[in-house]
Amino acid sequence: MKNYLKVLLGQLVIVLFGFSETYGQSVLDPYYFSGSGPVGTARYTSMGGAFATLGGDISGVSTNPAGGAVFVNHQIDLSLGIAGFETQVDRGEGTRFQINMPSAGVMFSIPVAESKWKAINFGLTSSRIKNFGRNIEYSDQVNAPNSFVDFLLADAGTIPPSELADNSFFGAMAYDTYILEWDENTGSYYTYAGGSSEQRVIYKRAGRNTDYDLNFSANYDNRLYLGVNLGVGNMEIKDEMQNIESFNDTLEKVEFRDDLIRSGSALLFKLGAIYRVNKNIRVSAFYHAPRHYRLLTTYTARLESGFEDNSGYRINDGFEFEYLLRLPSRYGGGVAVVLPKAGVFSIEAEKTRLQNAFLGYYDPGDGAFDADKSFFNSENVDIAQNYVDLISIRAGAEIKISNVALRAGINYQSQPFANKTDALLSRYKPRMFYTGGIGLRLNKNTSLDFFGTYASYRENFFPYSGGLNKEIKISEISIGTGLSLYF
Image (cartoon, rainbow, N blue to C red; front, top):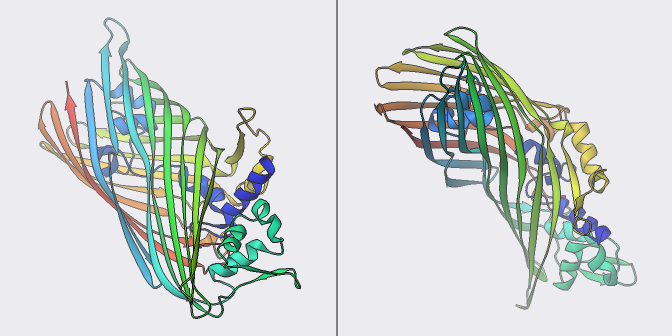
């Protein structure tokens, strides 16, 4: 069973949902799922996520648990937002919107009498780490050897039809729908689709990564703030691709659709500290332990053929498996300037050693993960050799004018790959998010905040191994609001 699954997974990697055959989807997982964007409470988001040193914010507690000790009141927070992703590609474009809840939580502050430990705080927080969204649509004219039928021919290779089911997932589907025919004399496959084709590709992605934290924190003498989070990280991603090719030949149409759903969770452990140097300056440090996501993956595929005599064939197939995705530890710190009744400024840096990420196989038979990672050996070698440290820098400022707060920030993430000259990897440039917002203190118990963010960056898109390489430009924008209640 394990060897058979290895064949299936190897073939799944080359149906790439937008990535190259060298750097398949699983190899890019550490890049997409590590780090964090400016997503959270309205105040946190509008200041670029720079709250590791300021504290007193629900999403800031998710970054630095010591921020929970800065709360001096009980507080409830709820945020709502809309995230939009516009994708531009040669001869096509697409847009996707997601309504989401970036953050929600409650914090309690319990004063301690006659002690330098001024308060013991605790709370529950839900903070969105990342939103995943894509919608790529384009049409193109494709010639051999770049069509999807060429991919099917290459996947089947010279495997006899009697052995296809065990050795070529997509080749077997193509043979059963008469897209491929076997020639006994040459020991190879051929097809009735010839020449160029008109290709239509539609790719969609949706999903999110959310942390649910139980925070315990303490305030020592209004100078040292300490905190720890125990929690669960939950991830869900759904990829869909549809590829339609039309030929002017006996085989007139080939339509392929597949869906990949991954969902799972990881236990979280976070530590943090904030120190008040004086009434205006604070410094901080935080650490997040590695995350071991156990991801259940469901893959389904449908292949359909249509011939000039109006005959046609369709087949559905799929499989399910579990695997381990280990994301490395994150650590960082920052400094903040706090001017009472005037405003704040905060800057922080964070580091994640992406080259230490790895994939592991889960064997349902013994209920354990493959500790030596040999099942994904080639993917793990690619991860170790091609990644570098991911550096995130966040900075934000807030200016207070009476009961109004004006906010702005930036969120920078470095280029993740070591090989900057590779034609494909060099397209993954550093990302910069620009953020802003406004806060209104309605009364002593209620605040209403608004935020907006914008980023633009480039990536690669390969609909399948051997397909035409497309450079895509992604514009990401989000807006939303948040309500805070103090009691």
